Length: 148
Image 1 (cartoon, rainbow, N blue to C red):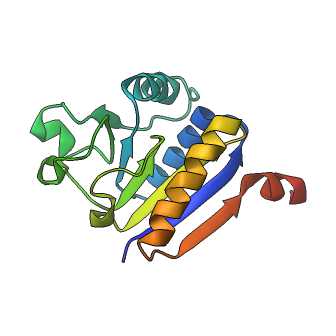
Image 2 (image 1 turned 90 degrees about the horizontal axis):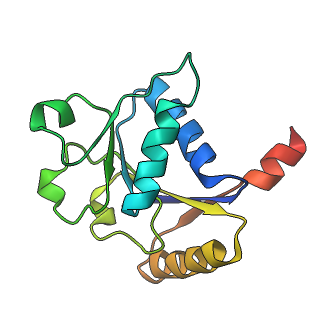
Image 3 (image 1 turned 45 degrees about the vertical axis):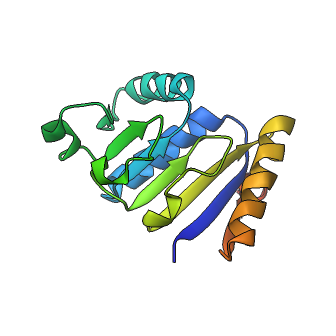
């Protein structure tokens, strides 16, 4: 069964997504990122400008197949065509809804900011996963930074 993890209280959702992807890349994980086109454009730019020392290889799902096969992080505004996806290890969801086909991934990571609407959408996603029988893991980022 797919592992569902919510990362709550992100001060800056894009910045946290970049840090998560940097860590995943260094752990040699394959990640699909789903979100709106504008979110993915912002993430793409943020990944290119993260730091001078970090290069996090990523591409869009529309990239040629030879690029997709070699790129550990793929950005997709929809993951409905699961056969077109190069890997199914981790799905990082930046959408307001539960992505279609999420259950084909080993893990789903949900990022939740401090914004009221984002938290409300997260509650609805949480309920959807819970209603489908998924156990949910919680990571409170505020508690993590408070203890550091």
